[in-house]
Length: 409
Ligand code: CTP
Ligand code: MG
Image (cartoon, rainbow, N blue to C red; front, side, top):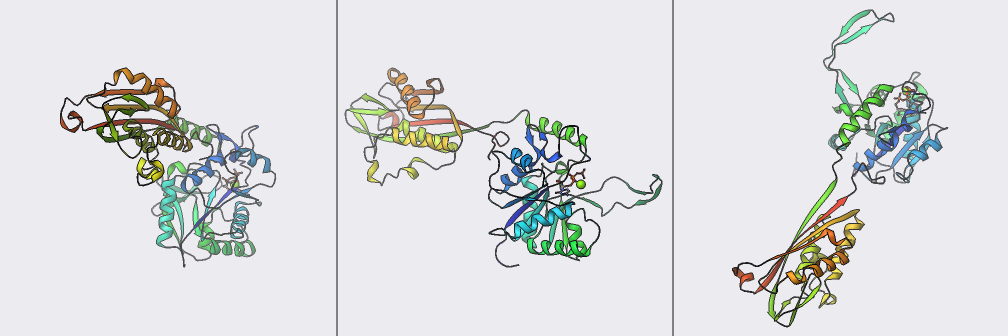
């Protein structure tokens, strides 16, 4: 296979879920699990792994409204096509739609909508195996660890099947798109009973398929009790929902030279020196700007406002701080706390502390209760002690929406 590999996804969701049927709850792929439709969870699992790969969802001809409602706000970029009478038919129709799309991928992951707990770790393992050997199909499977019996229709055991080398197949199953589509078309014409997974078709066509270790959490929701178990698992996983709290740190120093005032945390203080720097040299705002940028890994103040750029000469530093706070908000963060420590022998910070808190609160756009300003001298030691410069340290805290809560991640 030439060129780089790319992946697309076909999620089959055209079944009726008869074995899982519960009164009044409709096909299982649209049922809610932890408040989120099964199919939405399944799609999210792929989107979290690769936000951009093309996805085809194969739905039942009667389910357009159900699918639209389930994916409302989650996916606008998926392609939905009607499925067929068997899973095999549905897969073939999904593959054909993917192959006819504008930029068909080289490989397809074929997945059951009814397996919402597929993990990015498993998807990575499958992709790695495909990259090693792009012509071979790859499926996740778990070894059979119970003793396997073959029995007749009356439940009488005929023999024990050696379990060594036996596996239970899962999805997603990954294949070169053109090859699997061609085999599916051939099977639809030449083979007269249903294949229950896609690896079986590759095997039927004497093409190679490799196993990578599957995940027990990637079980298929098949019976009503599987929903009970999945709800229990979600509660155990999610109830102590770990909030996505990020803490950023910042540091800045500027030299003191002769002058008549300095600006610290946006407050102008009369003084017999000033801070030297390209902008207004407000070390407090600069350190806090870096701390905010750190919560989103967005580099430092110099990368956003290069000191070599003449437009920032003498600039008021609230521009920098405001910019950083907006970037954090644009990234989905809620700024919950800002803390600045100033290290200087003079001027005295105490009398200006409240004004500084207020100015930070205003520029960052948070309540003053969430702002702290502290100061200390440096015991006359070192460059701070000799009043050659002032240092500011800052910490910013922001909370981001977690995966489970965000509808469009
Ligand atoms: N599937 C499909 N088209 C069909 C039959 C099944 O797309 N004609 C899909 C199902 O929606 C499911 C996956 O294939 O996501 C695995 O099938 P299964 O677990 O058997 O689901 P159902 O066929 O819906 O359930 P049941 O067999 O209990 O009716
Ligand atoms: Mg079925």
